[in-house]
Image 1 (tube, one colour):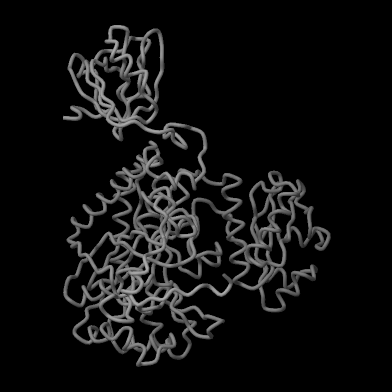
Image 2 (cartoon, rainbow, N blue to C red):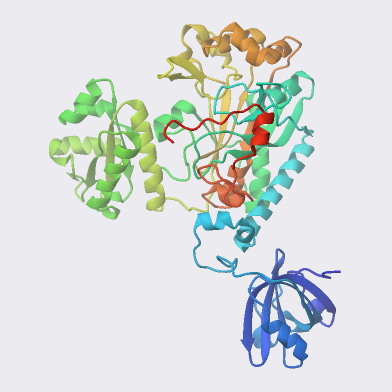
Length: 592
């Protein structure tokens, strides 16, 4: 037996017992003819002692130890002295007086130590992930992930859902992100696609009569990455029959209540707050707004249309928008240099033409870039519209709707964190509903689905599908946590005729629709019930519950932003034989 107890298990009640521990050497300290070792495993840490009463062989073995050696120690559990108790450790009342020590495996010098508090670059951490995963913070995060996953499974089981696995090797049905393709050795010139989601399979499950399905599903998307995205990710995938959007959202409300209470000790009130997509864009400039603080966007276009400031008036008269933010105490907190940096930020990141600004002085009058262009009476009217008070900073972007939304959302998000307008440990859960059915792709000059092409329109908007698709709103709903989209779902189309119409609106010929989605169209004609569902990004939910801002820190073996695995070297080259079997010829890039 390699151990009788874990390194986090021993307490005062074990005093006098002979035990065996195994683990990693975390720290070694020499003190008054005694060697003290902090022995660590994922359960905790125990102090073990080799004192002057130990044999020469034992003392010699202790002197040969190094950090991260894997050792086994046996001995007696003894009480620490009154002045030696470590209240920071669960095992801090006791220590192990060693009588036998075995080095199970030595360790070479490492690029960093798991217990070190010195900062380590992410690339170094990912390259040596087996060391990084020993760090206490990483272990706590993966344990949190395990706990969240178990709570989710328990909740789904309590609500009569069944767990069904769907294929990893499926058909490529391009409509969204780029697929990862897998060549078939058996079927010449044919490819599988790794699933971007189990969307079509779970709809088939509803048509097959399994009215409550869920899966902790692995999904794959070949898309540009950022801190909260990965090429392979995990989602909680859910589908339900005979439901409307309130049923699906109510189920997730209950799940969030359970997770927030059991993991964070937070009591959530349900139903969770709801905003329409149009309201979210108008008030916050984004379809996943952070509602932990206010600082909402104010539309000043009507004021601008009557303003003496020619720049604002000309934008408004051209049918564009003048919208702004009132930054509380921003006039005091933000220096001119910082405002110049914010101006460059909206220009470089969002293609805004500029950033107009004014600080509110004690008498309510302005100082700043536009102060001289407006008389005092007009300044006071703008103050009233924007609810500004002395010490505040007013910021405006004058441009088309999309640019004002993006730029002001970026400013709001940046300044909300910078000026500490909310508690970073707080959690806010909400819904955004009634998304547009379609977005217009200017490059391809066609409509594309905002969510996916299987989304049902609101009943009263079905008539717009052919007459004016831009007006059609979807039975769609996104769960938003702290300004992140944590999940998205829709009520699905269950009528084959309507589904064919949607494919047509998206630019698919009947032949193309049959080739890509014929099995779905056929299934919809065989007694398909009304159904809908949702998928929650499990990685992102764990990241938010853990209070982190990088999704790679909640995944055991993540990829970099260039979709590479620094530990294993994936993706890598393969043998010529494998390529020949798959009938694949490598072509050098034109610029190589």
